[in-house]
Each structure stands twice: as C-alpha cells, then as structure tokens.
Image 1 (tube, rainbow, N blue to C red):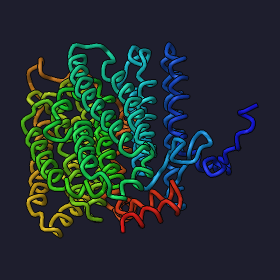
Image 2 (cartoon, rainbow, N blue to C red; image 1 turned 180 degrees about the vertical axis):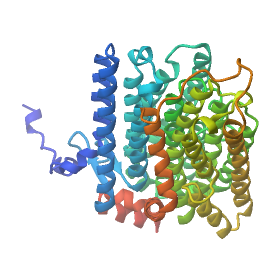
Image 3 (cartoon, one colour; image 1 turned 120 degrees about the vertical axis):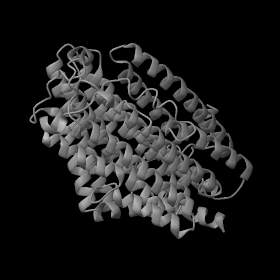
Length: 531
C-alpha cells in the first residue's frame, strides 16, 4: 500500500510519443538484411548454388536500402531513429548524416560487387564453411558502424564486423592465412581494448554514451584535461584500426593471405571505419581537441602517405603492393581531418568514397590477372596485353585513377586537398600529397608494365596455366562495374563534390547533428554554454 501512495512519475518527455515514419526504418535495414540473409545462407550452406543466389539477393536488397537512405538524407536532412520507445539520450539511437549515409551507400555497392565476384572466386568448400554468412555479417557491422548514434554501439558494431572479418580471413585454414589472421586479430584486439577503455573513461566523465549528448555536454568546456586524454586515446585506437603510420604493420602482414574477394572487401571497407570514427570523434564530439591535435594528425597523415607509397615500390607481390597503396590512401583522408577546413574535409570525404570503390576494384582486377598468369609475382608476370586487351583497358583506367591522374576519380579529391593545404600555408603537407602520388604512380605503372607490356615468360615453369574467366562471367561484371563508377566520378565530379561539401558542412557544424538527435532545446543549451 505504501508504494501505491507514491506520486506517479511523468515520463512523457522521455518516451517516444509518435511512431517513426516508414522511411526511418531504412536506418536499420542494412543490419536486419545482413542478419536475416546471413542466417538463410547459414541454413543452406550445403547447397552452394542456392546459397550464392540468396546472398546476392540479400546484398542487392541491402544496396537498394542504402540508396534509398541516401536519397532520404539528401531530401530531408539527417534521418534519426531511437530504439526502445525511449528518447535520446536514454534510447539507443541510429542517425544518418551525409557522412554516414555516403559511407553506408558505398559499403552496399562494394559488398554487392564482391558478392558477385565471389561466385567464381570462392570454391564450394569455402562457401560451405561460411563465406557468404561472414560477408553479410561484416557488411551489416560496417554499415551499422556508419549509422549508429551511440559511441558504445560503435564499439559493438566494430566487434560485429571484426567477427565477420576473422571468419573470412581464415577460410581455407592455410598456413599463411593463419599467420596473417593471428597478427590481424592480436593488433585489432589491442586497438579494440583501447577503444573500450576510452569509452568507459568517457562515460565516467560525461555520464552519457549518446554522441549528440556528448557533443552537447562537451561544448560546456569543462574538464579540459580528461577530454584531451580521451582524444589521444581515441586517436591511438582508431589510427591503429585505420592502419595509419606507425600503427600500420598489421595490414601488409594479413591482407595478401586470403582469397582475392576477401582482400578486396577488406581493402575497400575495414580501414575506412577507423577513418570514419576519427572524423566523428574529432569533428562532432571533440572539435576543439581535434584542432589542438591537428599538427600531430597532419604529421601522421604525411608519414602515412609517403611511407605507404615507398612500401608499395618495394614489393614484388602485387597483393602486398596494393596493401601499401591502401595504407598510403589513409594518409590523404587524415590530411583532410588535420586541415579541418571545409575544402580539406570535403576532399577527404570524396577521397574516402573514391578509395572504397577503387581499392576494391584494384584487388578484383589483380585477382583476374593472377588467374590468367597463375602468379602474383611481378618477376614472373607478363603477356596479358596480347591475351586480353579489354583487361588492359580496365587496368589502365584503375592505375590512372589510383595515381590521381585525369580524367578519373582520384584527381579531384587530391586537387582539393592540395589547395586546402596551400590555403592555410601547410606547404609540406601539399608536397607530401604530390610526392606520394608520384611514388604511387611509379609503383602501379610498374605493375601494368610488367604484367601487360612485357612478353610472357618463355620458361614453361613460369608460364601461366589457368584460363581466364570469360567476359560474361561474374568476376568481370563486378570489376567493370566498379571501374565505370571511377570513370563517372572523374568525368562528372560535380554531384560527388556537392555531396562531399554537404558532408563537410555538417561536420563543421556539430549543432546540426545535436539538433537532429536531441532537438532545438539542446542546441540552445549548447550555444549558451559555448558563449
């Protein structure tokens, strides 16, 4: 009876009072699609043909959902949905701004291309042991990481994508795979542990895990010391996940060991999640700390660009060479973050989207080249031009795009980053971009020259013995499809630059994110505290 006499608590201001519109469900569609179709693939693992069809259907549906989500963000602005009937910061929030929606869109396209390619690249045994379920799980984890509005759930989605990536990495259980997986798992475990420690420290300081709420509270300017410590911890953890120098050594030790389909999706997606997290932390949560660490991030960016390109020059295995090209590309994205200007951030976002497509396409390309030559060793390569002129044309386009040469997609973000560097007088960062571009061009032209222009080895032991897939087969469809995207982005860059500009504009105004998630009252408090 005593409990009945207590006054009732009015929870109306903490509860969701209106049902979400149908379009808001697009935020969790990649997660639901990945889990449902991954489960279906697991149940049909003994039927490789039907499993492939189910996986391609799921990846196609996922791509459709992220396209619709991106169009919603373009037309409506940020799309926000909070789970469990509780309003933020109490409920778990999913939020898509231009940055998250763009990265989720590219993730859907890349995953679909790899799923199509894998039909001919992954044998029946590896399909039975879970290639497609792991691919769908990893895709769901990556997409959800781009769309979550809760920093602890960012950690959760990191774990989900890592589980999928571990499964993909060890499929086949070859000695080189297990060795690469051990290094990959150990170093990612260190980064994840640091991330979790930082999240616990953050919750102890701010008492919230909702990103918009953290941004609102951080704007008060209190606890400067702990906030800077947090920023350094997050920088270290996510720089390792992004494979930035000097924390990059796990990537070239592992990315060349699995099947090409796996290497391709890793190169396209995994390091970009670390880059995305750095942008979210230093542009939305702790922009002042990001500005203070700008010089450190710029030095890391320059070192990553140049050392990655030098590492590519030193390789004779094409798969390892591309691993260093992935590392070098991370430096361009970090350069935009370090600059912190509208053009710098826009260039970094454009470059990240370009890199997700390009690096996937390059790995798929060398998979075809390796099958035709029966080797990935440049010392044994040759003879491809006479056997497949069409493949030479695709390789020529992708080499130009990766080098930042016109008229392909790599040119425009590099020009934007160089101009942004010169605008603020950081000439050495602009020089690093140019130098790494030249070195990357030399490394990739070397691959093209050795593989296509040089005659095939005359020694029968060195000659390729595998027949290339015909042009109508899935491996060509996936590779050419991604190559066409790089051409379109290079010839018609305006819509891509406009989208990158919008992403940069939102990142530079964290109050837009706070207002979309928490409402106008929270923004008023945020602005008042800043004053």
